[in-house]
Image (cartoon, rainbow, N blue to C red):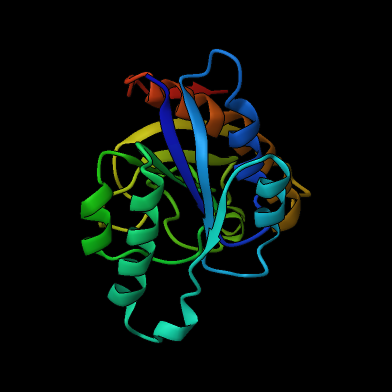
Length: 197
């Protein structure tokens, strides 16, 4: 039975595009919803252009009440009946209450080789530390930030003249390869880690 995938994003949706475009042919999943907390997210139009339903739940009217925002988010997701939830540049930290409802079915991609550099500014931190390689990680989401079982990693070398921007661009190319590969395997029920050189 084909799995239904909902994707949450906040921005341009490049990882969403790579996921949706991968779900064709004999792929075991299909996108059922792309949702954002931002009306202006460029990814919404890209999803609509691909025939995927879209929705917006703006977090701003809820102020500091994250649980109230997440209740509305959850209700809209339930309507779409996803089997898998993919975070793809969704720039909201989710509470334990929300994560617990979807744990075991929710994936995230993070632009570092976890457990290194949880949180933001990952590329600058890797450069500041003098690392020789960087990369990205797809993991199951747990209540702890950028934690949870690692399902895939892709490494890229750090060049002597790299800036955070140049490194980010090369890592993003690998994100677009890794995330679809992990999603396909996850949808098949396989949680074995994928390692890209």
